[in-house]
Amino acid sequence: MPVPIYDIFDDIDLTPGLPAQGRDSGSWRRPIWEDDGDGGTIVAVWKAEPGVYSYPARPLEETFVVLEGEALCTLGDAEPVRIRPGSIVRVPLGSSVSLEVLSPFRKLATVVPKI
View 1: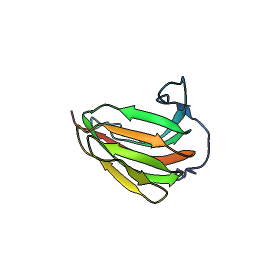
View 2: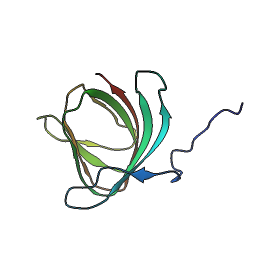
View 3: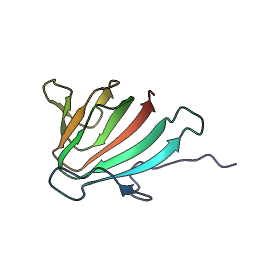
View 4: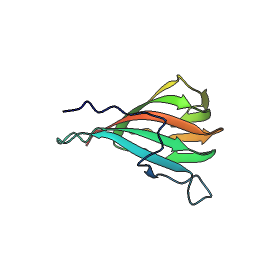
């Protein structure tokens, strides 16, 4: 059985993601791995054009690594923090998150549902 190897910068198998505020599109995602068990863990690449992407508090934890671009990241009521390639962000369980994407952006995320 061949070892699955993915190129994070391949724009294949992308599906539409959350649109930027005020637009009909703006982001795309590509699942890399999904847990077949009851856990529901997902590893995915997320790509976005400049714009604001806001997610409400959700019953999950997410950790992501910025691969490309810059954004202002706001977790809950905290002050925005500039993130860029190499930044690792942990979104705690039940925290809202907003990304103001400043330049074409790409991240690798692991999402773990906590239901």
